[in-house]
Image (cartoon, rainbow, N blue to C red; front, side, top):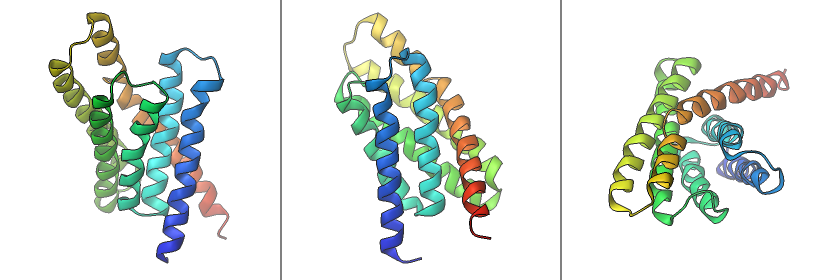
Length: 171
C-alpha cells in the first residue's frame, strides 16, 4: 500500500475519532457512561489505524486523542495529556506486537491490559505532583483505572466487527 493511502486512512480515522470525542459535547450523557462509549469507540479507531494505516500512524492518533480530550475539558489539566497519550500508545503497541505473534483476540487482551496498567501507573504518578482536591483525585483514579480495561476490550470488539465488515467487502 502506498504511503498516501495509509496517510489518508489515518486522517479519516482521526476525523472519525474527533466526531466520537465530540459526542459528549452534544449528547447529555453522564460522564461515566460516555467514558465507556466514547473510550471504546476511540480505542476501536486506534486498532483500525494499526490494521489499515500503520502502527506508526496509529501512535500519532494515540497522542492526538488526549489533546482533543483536554480541549473539550475532559482532562482537568494539560499534564494529564501525558498519561493518556502513554496509555493509548501502550494500547497501540500492545496490540501491534500481540497481533504479530498471537492473533487478534490475545492481542486485544494484551493491549487492554497494557493500557489499563500504563494509565493507572501514570495517573498515580501525576496525581502525586499536582495539587488537586481529594474529590477530583478520587474521580480521576476511578476514571483512569479499571474502566480503561473495559474500554480497551470494547474497542477490540468494535474493531473486530468493523474489520470483518471491511473484509467482506473485498470479495
